[in-house]
Length: 295
Ligand SMILES: [Fe+2]
Ligand SMILES: [Fe+2]
Image 1: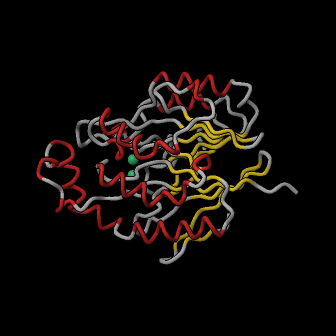
Image 2: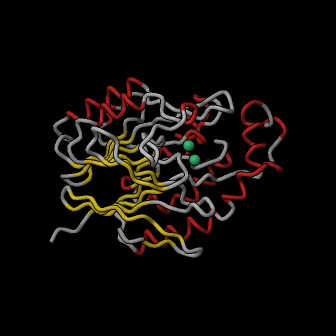
Image 3: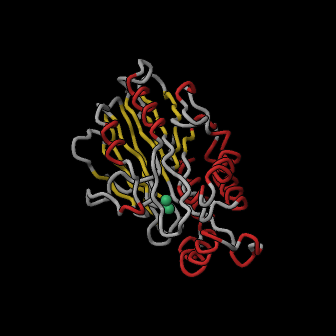
């Protein structure tokens, strides 16, 4: 009997710098407000991140995981120190690089798109190689991995910098969406089971759209593009609760990984794909270890 393909999906680990040690020149504009906000309440929910990532790595090694997918928000503020630390902590998941697929979250490109975006790319370049590079509209995305003969992973970059602190919305650039549509029709991809990977959640757990200032702005265009996928799943993060939900008219179910490290919200998914049959198991955290909850 054919061995199922096993995929680990985790997200939103939010590695934070110690804001008390940040140099004064970083304390301005959105970053300052974000840092203050973080210092005020958020950081304490992510205090055991390293312990939880160690446990997740043990889980990965004990559970014959073939592919690991991370849907972004590695950091709190997109700072160089945070990206560097995040890369160090997830590096063991990236072996071999071809079996690790990722996208940045909005927190990873927090302030200035060009500079911060290239910072993310600097740290994660080793896992940003596409099997169909001719479709990359901005150098890296859409990123395609062809897995065996029957599965493909297509990652879209939906994160962008927002210059005002009350906005954390994103958008898939129109050129990237056009390229995505072409990829879905490509003979090398068409007919495979397709995992679509992005940071923003196309639907909340209750099936509704996210609040405008926290959402994917062109979510309907994205879902329209996904309508042609016969067999697939849409994998996201951004919302710090793990859940699965259907969107009307879309055959691919949506899976949000939540946060692997946020206190009392720890979660993620393992997918088992046999042919075109997908089974999904939520991850459970018991304070020391991750394990599989029953389906
Ligand atoms: Fe997040
Ligand atoms: Fe996010």
